Each structure stands twice: as C-alpha cells, then as structure tokens.
Image 1 (cartoon, rainbow, N blue to C red):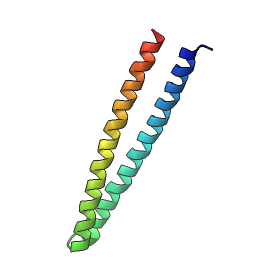
Image 2 (cartoon, helix red, strand yellow; image 1 turned 60 degrees about the vertical axis):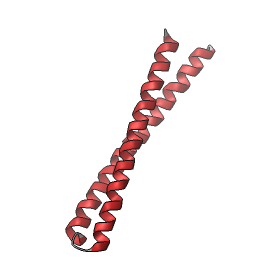
Image 3 (tube, rainbow, N blue to C red; image 1 turned 135 degrees about the horizontal axis):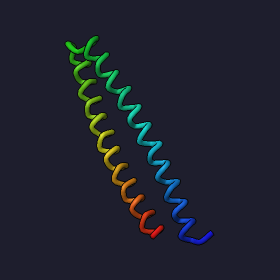
Image 4 (cartoon, rainbow, N blue to C red; image 1 turned 60 degrees about the horizontal axis):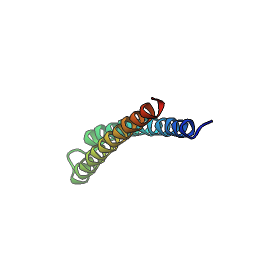
Length: 86
C-alpha cells in the first residue's frame, strides 16, 4: 500500500469519526430541547427555571457551532481525499 493510500484511508476513518460525533451532538441537542420544554412547562414562571432555560439555549447554540465546525472539517477532509485520489 502506498503512502497516499494510507493517508486516504486515515482520512476516511477521521471522516467517519466526525460523522459519529455529529450524530451524537444531534442526539444530545434533542435531549436538551426536550429538557427545555419540560423545564418551561414545570418551572417556566420561576427565576431558576428561566435561568436554566437560558443556559440550555446557550448550550444549544454551542452545539450548533460545533456541528458547523464538524461539517466544515468533513468538507475539507473530503476535498483532501478527492485531491489525493486524482
């Protein structure tokens, strides 16, 4: 196996790992959204509940940023793979 093939295989593995992490982030974002709904329904009229919801929304924003960064990384990796295969 050539060095280019080894590098390409490593890049495919990294791409797969990134996809797995993205799926996990999406799952966690769903859990956080469900927690926000429950918190608003139960404690939405109380200060601690409102503060928790604000923190959870910030967490969702951070997850969204992470998902964007992972998408960009996957795009760059795929571009590298394509360049190596040509």
